[in-house]
Image (cartoon, rainbow, N blue to C red):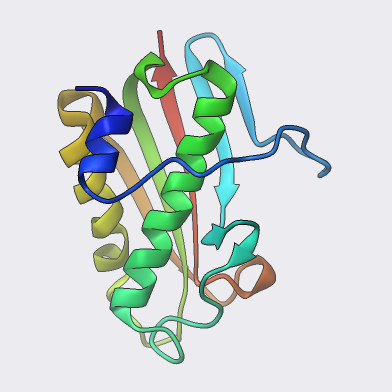
Length: 153
């Protein structure tokens, strides 16, 4: 079973991403066998699915969904750079940034939704390291931003 079909079986799909970045940085940079994917927000068709602060206007469940959307956007970058997800040899590292209230302490629970999905879909290749950080705000008001490093064949 391919990674894309494993995602599809769980109700997820790789979003279509337009080629041609108009920002001052790249969506992803490949060096050697590693792809460093820039931070992605929880955008669907270019529009934020959620806006707000976790622990205030965004619930844990909404933040978890936002994190998974942002992760899928990261995978779209890898797909665009490699041609297909089967080129992924390993998900090396995932970083999650959670815009939250000062007293919010469930940041790891937000990103556990992503780690669980990665482990389910990628199996051994999905065993990754992770960082989760709480921040005061994120670009555009997204409640979660995700970036990652993958090893490719």
